[in-house]
Length: 145
Image 1: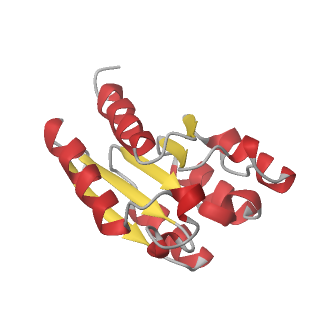
Image 2: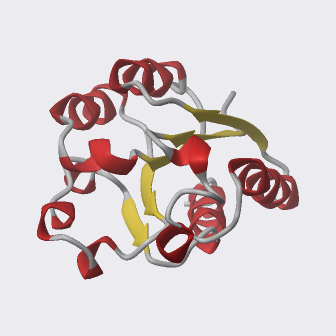
């Protein structure tokens, strides 16, 4: 599993393409998965791609990623509310790159706080699906450092 990247997506990301397209764009979750798969293939990496609307399931998915190269995590609204996700990242000791499609700092003030950022290797926001590609590139580069 060391050559595997886990891309984990939180609540409402199953509605990509139709939910607030002015904020999140028209790319669907299936489109996002295909883009992540192509990025992983360029680096010779396997991909585990998951989406859940349930906080506890995201914690479980983080735990199941142990031993992998790392995780690209878009925890969505749980970013701003979930101490459990921050604790899970610390507990598993993985490289995690926090990703957001929109620029959370240009949005409502409650979105400016993250329980993920302090324990993440890096944060990418506001670049749409390109943020996922950049996160995968960063994890791939970590193999050599």
